[in-house]
Length: 268
Image (cartoon, rainbow, N blue to C red):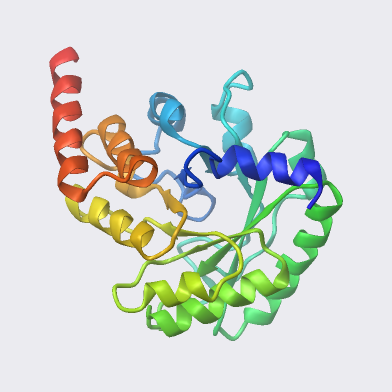
């Protein structure tokens, strides 16, 4: 691995802990103005000091994020369908060239593959091309293992999709946490695994999920709605950081969340 690749990865997965808190706000590329992200800059800016990397699209980056911020960028480079097209949802192709990603000085590019769907071949081959182009510039790739509506989220499927992404050449895998056997997903994947936050759930449950994933071998989370749709997003991202980077228990992290939430209410 070249120096540039190592350097970019070390900005995302922090060497001191070997862990990462990725903040995903790329939902607009297929969901439009997602609840909580209607004014993306107003939501995201207070969260940036606590994020190890910000995952978003090139449009959101250019229109909402100041180039003066010091946060590594993970750029979404796949898309092609919207939430309205249920039959083709996540049938994604390349929506941003690696050359443009270089112009944006990103630290990583992210692409979704859908394993097990009729069009899995399209997403896998497109991602393979992105990997080749990104490697030519020393840019790491994040493989998002998307799940179709009719597919069961279990360890067997997550093992398959995660290993497939790694074998294609991805540098980081993003997948869903599953209760039974998640350690077999991380053990059988030769590159770091982060978990997706998924749909909004109660704060303590989200912290429990993060804690369980780290205990099972994940290097972090790529969390979106469970942070920016929280009652107190700034408190929540700090609580998540305490679990990921500091090894806090779920109760300790939830107590921190409640304490910080109270401070925010007092100052507003």
